[in-house]
Length: 171
Ligand code: S3P
Image 1: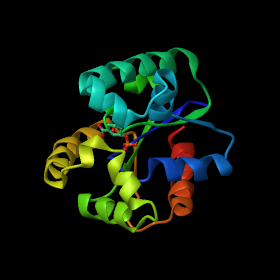
Image 2: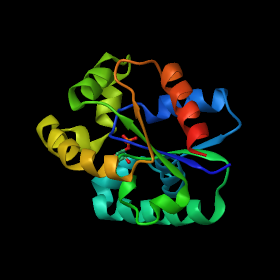
Image 3: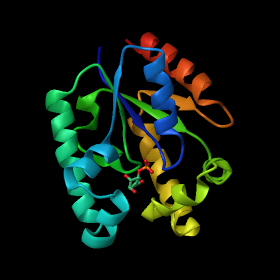
């Protein structure tokens, strides 16, 4: 099985959909932010705060090279900026979880841990800036995606079913 690489904006639900997919398939699952946090033994927010974004992007690059070289049969959830890695397409089938900006923010705000979810994401601290980032990234996400799953107002379970069906069809 080829890897499936989940891309999409912060808070769109990549982690939740990934957890559903692995319940209903034989994929293993990993998350690029989790890998980086274990490599560094500190949180993404702390890496951004103390080392800056460029340092973080270099860590993403190391992860991307390792994924291409060493990982198979795996559903890979990525941080919202990971799509910029040059070897992305070599890692696996690219699946975009897509939703309008306002729906994503609404989704985060409705979460019981909303404050924590916002706090841990440095690039969401200013919503005006985050919207600009969304507008710049969305066409790039769409260009890279082999498969698009619209997740707006859908449960993670429904999204995971749609994802698995589309991946199977894609081959
Ligand atoms: C980022 C998204 C975050 C995390 C970091 C940068 C981005 O991951 O990698 O804060 O550039 O969009 P999530 O998409 O899981 O929030």
